[in-house]
Length: 157
Image (cartoon, rainbow, N blue to C red):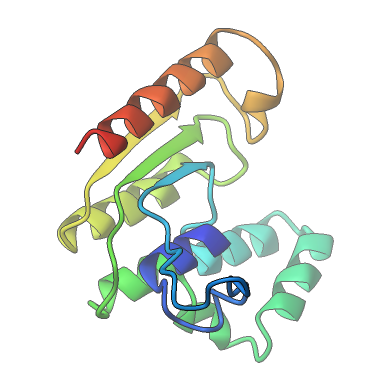
């Protein structure tokens, strides 16, 4: 979910902590985003961790979002639904159908992104879990082809 926060708020110093020392005036913000099963709804992810009794991830989430109410301020879906003034970079989002975070959570983010005026390509990969791209095969080949085509469209615009 870090890349989504950075893409939405590219000039927020909390998300752009790596200045280009050689040329600080250079705008190095990203032009587009390709994401696989991203954390686009950090609070829904936390609720899912609670439901699954995944105490390890619950503890990590609480440590990352301290104070815990920051989970809402930094939640990409909530940022969009609050209609904050954000940057909307073209986004390719690929989600495994069997991901531990249900595709319905991503769909809610996709809907919020589109409602805010963003351009997004969203694909659910059938019979694929969270780490589906780690195994070579037809789904990985499809993801690579989608990413190449997406990049080509971005650089040729």
